[in-house]
Length: 273
Image (tube, rainbow, N blue to C red):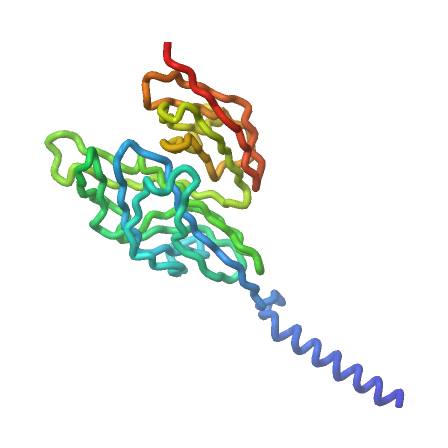
């Protein structure tokens, strides 16, 4: 009986070692890779245009540190009006399941044509001088963990991305030179509130030191605003009315905590003197 038990224990031990070895490579490193989820969201800082329309063909990600290893995670094949993605609004460019590990870069492949900007009700085409073939590359170092979702925020800054050519230069009149900032939603927070009177129609900025890190317009119907994708820290929130009948105002020492929204309540702008 004792010999039978010992023999069974040896067999189980050998089977266990076999499973362990099969899950490792020659260096002894486990090759059983878990899976996590990546979601890519795009939002925008506002610009003084009626529309800024950008056509995104696909979104790719790279796990390697060289030009190899790019994989497609989504193919939107869709036009987006960036100015609809302000004040906390966003669109999901893609979501996918990936092997765990660090993904160093992401890129947006834009169409070579079809982009446009609407100025004073008139639609004008935009030319992409580069990026349609190689894509708009962003360093992200996204750490995909097993059974967890990583949300990547892409802030497509329309005001800095649309460039008007000088007089006498060839058509089209406008160039699209994308300026995009990528952040991990898990390490950011938000600021929101309401501005009165609504007719002041202010631009709202989140400023850290001398850097403006987020911008939005207060809603023209109820005055609500939301600044998203801010890293933890202290900010000055500046209100700059587009209606010159009202005076600008700053609120300093606004704290942002990861995963939370700091509610400023109602900010009342005074009449200009």
